Image (cartoon, rainbow, N blue to C red; front, side, top):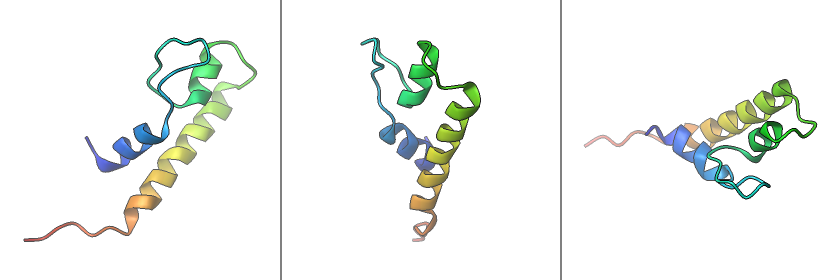
Length: 65
């Protein structure tokens, strides 16, 4: 699993408000249960989380041995 994806998953909540397991950000779970978040708003938030994860890992150098 790429480090960026693992970081995004670590930032995401695993349980939606309905109590059912959900493997994704809370905003996506809320959109699925009929709250006011639109698909565009959800994708903006998901993309922002991915960018934040990429920026956190951007300064790391690959190990060379």
